[in-house]
Image 1 (tube, rainbow, N blue to C red):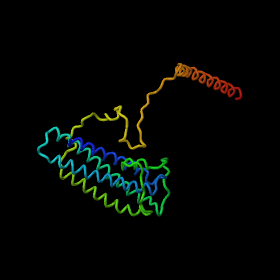
Image 2 (cartoon, helix red, strand yellow):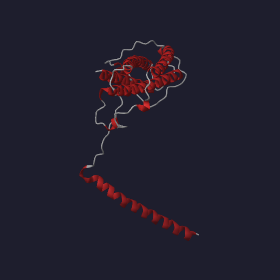
Image 3 (cartoon, helix red, strand yellow):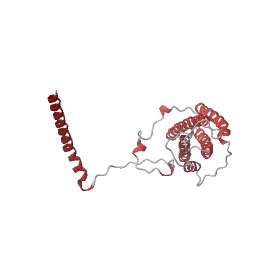
Image 4 (cartoon, helix red, strand yellow):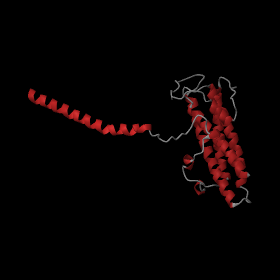
Length: 247
């Protein structure tokens, strides 16, 4: 029961941190807006709440001396995954702070970058918050006021990561993976509800052309190449003959 609960909580954290990363990508682009800044704020706070819940649960389980060796190995594996997710969240929060400072909305200091991204990020934010529709309530100065809160939260996350390393001694290199590297890419399972929403991975097998049209077209290619080569030789010969006679 404890392992299933931990996996569910960790999956929720991974989903929210993935959504947060996708939102950070839109910062400073033509998709940037006051709504995006509010989405970033609410998404990262949700991620921090889930991080605290994951830390509390996993810490208590790993400190339990009565659990079996197999259960401890599984909890250590989940702890490494949790630590990796926290590192990514910290990096994205710092990136959000830097880009937010470079591209203030209230008093723009530079033009937004045309990255090719279009459309709203509301779907991604709603997926992260597990709601049907996002309701925006932020003030017009959110881009400046939120930067101060973000700086404080970055410090808190950094301290949290340091405390995690001190309370639980789990060496990442000593944890064995349960599947081969890249196994998730070979899986036939659909992306499903755990996906970011706007990102999809599709693999399509090349389709053979009907009626043998493809083989006929490919067989004509060498013939055309030979014909072009002969034409070039003939033109070169004629030009050479004219040059010799004129001289």
